[in-house]
Amino acid sequence: MTSASHALSPLALQAAARGVQTLAPDQAMTLRPARDGVLRVQRGALWVTQGDGASTGCRAGDEFLWPGQRLSLRAGDAVVVEPIAVPGTPVQRVALEWQPSPATRWSADVARPAHELRRALHDAAQAGMRLARGLLRWALQRPPSCGEMG
Image (tube, rainbow, N blue to C red; front, top):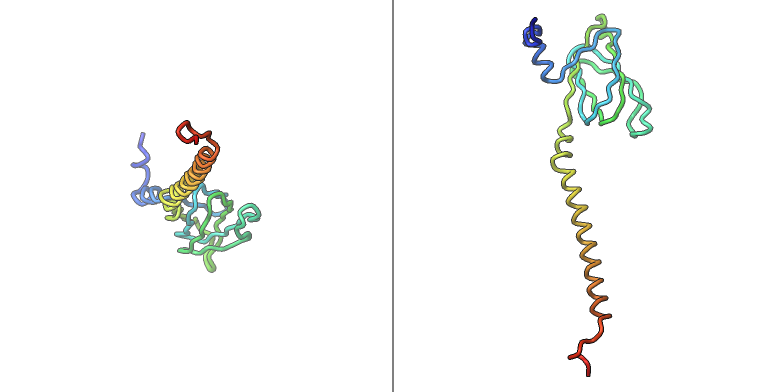
């Protein structure tokens, strides 16, 4: 029994490691990325149909992507992709590459913790204000001590 590494060519192994996927003629595929990223056509041409966009505010409709072109997708977007013929050639297998957006790392590594810190500081400031008001009320309403009576 041969292992997958022996059954695939070195180029196929490199493509799989980079997130390259192929799509045969007359085959359609629905993509719904879990993270923001970019879909790049490496070989062939692609017909992309995007959803109605009502829930995400994204554009809707059809687009055609040629070799080397890219399409930015947001997490949760739904698109259907299908190979089409490049003018003057028959429909061929399309090679697609998915690249997570660098902004996704920024969001996870910096933006989200910064937002959490801002929320925590806001909560701490509000708690400090409530504490100051409580101390002021306590100081104004406490009964005079023995030494303060006249």
